[in-house]
Image: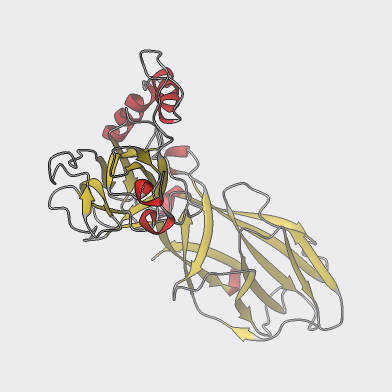
Length: 347
C-alpha cells in the first residue's frame, strides 16, 4: 500500500464532548476568566479509499473550538487553551447563596456512572453498547480548556483544516458525507460575591508574650460563607503582582506604644510552610504558616527593643485573594498601630 493510500483526505468521525462522557451535554463554570472546563475533540481521519487513518501532528494542531452557531472562532470573553491551570474545574454541587445551583448539583449526583464506564469502553475501541467488537481505529484526542469572563451559555463545536485546505466542522454544515453534528454547551455563571462577614481573620499568638522582647502573631484569612469553608488558594497585589514568598506590607518604624518599639506585617504566599527572618543582630526567627488548609496567613511581628526592622512602610495594603474556583475577592488590611492590630476589610 503506497503512501498516497494513507494520506488523509477526509474525516471518518468527529466528536466534541466533555471528559465526563457523552451523556453530559452541558456544564457550568464561573465566568471569572480563570475557572476551566475540559472539552475533548475525538477524531478519526480517512484516506481516499475510505480506510480510517490517523491524522498527522500538523493536522491535529489545526483543530480548534468554534461557536456552533455561525461557525466562527470563540469570542466575546470565551476562549480555549491547551494548557490546564491549577483551579478547580468542577462546578460546586453546593453553592451557598443560589438555590438553583443546588438543584443543579443534585442532578449531577443522579448521573449514571455505569453509563459513563460503558461509554468509555466504546471510546477506547473495546466493545460497542451491543457487546460486539469494533474494527475502528482508536480515535485521536485533543484536549481544550475553556474559560469565559462572560455570563450566559455558549454551544461549542470544533473545526479542523485538512492537508488539502478543506475545513471540516461539527456544527452540522458541510458537504454530503463530511457533515458532522456534535457540540457541548457551557454556561458561564456570575461569580459569587461575599460580604466581609463571610471572611474570618483569626489572630493567634505564635511566639512570645507582652513580657518578652518580641512576639509574633499569625492572622488567618479564611472564607466561610454560611459557615461552610470555601478554600482560598493564592493572593495577588492590587497592581497584579503574584505575591510570591513572604511580602512585607507594613512597617511602623520606631513608635512609642506600650510593649512596642516597632510593628511589621507580612502576607505569606500559600506555597510556604514557614515565616522566617534574620534580624539585624543575626538572630533567626521562624514560625509555622499556612497550617490551616485553604486559609492564607498574615504574620505580625512586634518587638520591644530597637534592634530590628525600624524601616517605615505604612498605609493600607490592598490585595486580592482567589478561591479554588478562581474567583477574585478584593481585600484590604488596615493597621491600627495604637491597638497593634490588623483589620481585614473589603474594597
